[in-house]
Length: 162
Image 1 (cartoon, helix red, strand yellow):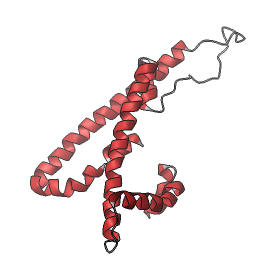
Image 2 (image 1 turned 135 degrees about the horizontal axis):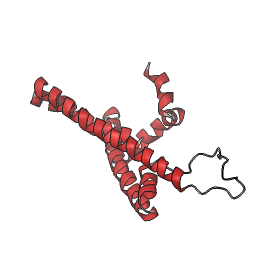
Image 3 (image 1 turned 180 degrees about the vertical axis):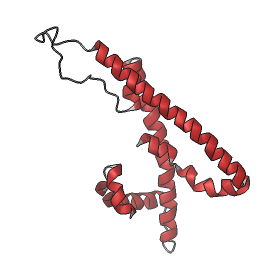
Image 4 (image 1 turned 120 degrees about the horizontal axis):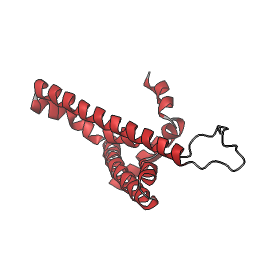
């Protein structure tokens, strides 16, 4: 979710205006250049996860009841589900907590811009009523509760796309 919200932020709403001012050739060149940067970062993230899993496998203590020749069926116990967990595995627990706070804080700020857009949209929908921005954002959030609860995973969103 974090990578998706970072890639598809509110800045995508301005892409049409940027493409118009750059022209089609420079826009296509920019997209192609940024694709390779994004691909490189994805490869680095995959390599980091693989190396941390291998490191966890090498550091895993053997249970005392297991014989030296017997292979245990347990998988390595490395928590690599979030960027904070990866930082904890790579460095220290304090670094992991710091990275978690930074990443989730940045994402929260990014999502806040969506709330502002939602609130301003609600003000336009109910333009005949005097509605402050905070009330409009709250109303928009209440209106989104049902779709958010219905779509808990990204795979569930395919149903509403078609």
